[in-house]
Length: 239
Image (cartoon, rainbow, N blue to C red; front, top):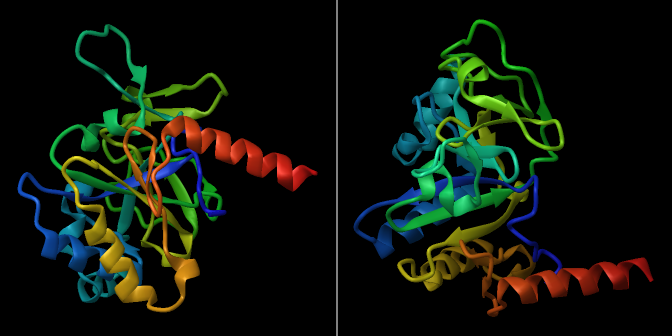
């Protein structure tokens, strides 16, 4: 279980891949198999709300036409929201980010260290084509001036409604796991989708977490147990 991680750690990148008021097991399995096979494809839509409408043929046409398909995401410790009842913006946990606060949700966590951060252009470019393996603040609406601040580490942070964006696609080899609403999402739909894709290569199965930070598959661990497991793993690696 070397892939297990604390999903609340600063720097963990995540993006929503499923959001529907009515849970659909068949659609979830189909959607997951598609993502695990061809990667998470970006789109030229304005927000993450529409990414599930796009298939590889549409995506390839956009890439060929240099329209700049993008994947939108947020980063732990660098995303904030203007929460009800608070006068100032608050840095938020994954479940409090703008697109994960309602409906049964599934989020994908992925390796951000594969990408190099760049500075958003001035003025904002609505359909800017990002270079390969680059990411930046989603500045299509001028958020750099109106919706960003610096976190305690001096990193530029952004309202989770806008988040960050990267170019074109996240490949399956960058995936690190899934995060679900464990009371409204059937984890075995995700397991079934993974098994259908990886078949006998069990090393490619990904862990599933809850938005509370617990591990829910392949075994259950509370968030505290996950933290203890990681601490022991790091001690063993250093010995």
